[in-house]
Length: 315
Image (cartoon, rainbow, N blue to C red; front, side, top):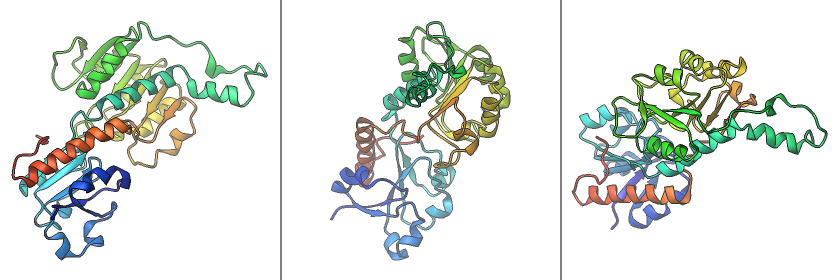
């Protein structure tokens, strides 16, 4: 009889097919498990699968008395109360680096789309303005990439892949992280110093209490009127109200956002602006990324049910 695993977050069923071939899955479809399944059915659940950004507090863990493994589908684990898991002797695993290449690709795509004004240019062609020779201030000449300074906030697996891609565009690359890394890029001692230096600020840092709204009005002002901010990490890192003001008042030139603080509801102030590019958290949404994330989930679950340490533990 296959081991039973609870699906805690809401996932498209197609993403769970491979995992369902190996384990018996109980799908809570994003609802509190106690509202979907009787207590006696939950009492034997030893492992769950969750999306890293979904809130998983200790009180939910307490509805699963046998729970000993929380497996995050993806790199993130910011929604899991790690202290509560540790107190309850629950191991937490994730899929480190599994979607890094896809997320890095989207970061570069958002940067190019924002800096080259692709969305306004597309509309300019579609609505007949180009054919009618109408002037458009959004299509004025803009700086090119060679020599552009890009600052990467967070130089983990995703940040490094972003840097590698940007190097091909002949850009200068700097970074800030909690500690200096062995990478061939200029290190800055603070986010403030990085923003003062660069014209594109790439956010690739994990969400935590320490990074909440780090990119605020002051940081955006340091980027300047020719500056851009690109976020493929977590929406909570940016003060979205400050960003909307900065975009409306031309404090910065533009932004590219794949993540938002309250998904799937980006602030209306942002959706109505022409100088921001928005995508629905699709950074890791490629076939190869999903296959890699599923590999990690399966490896973690198989190790756990075999009585071994998780293959990819969150430390």
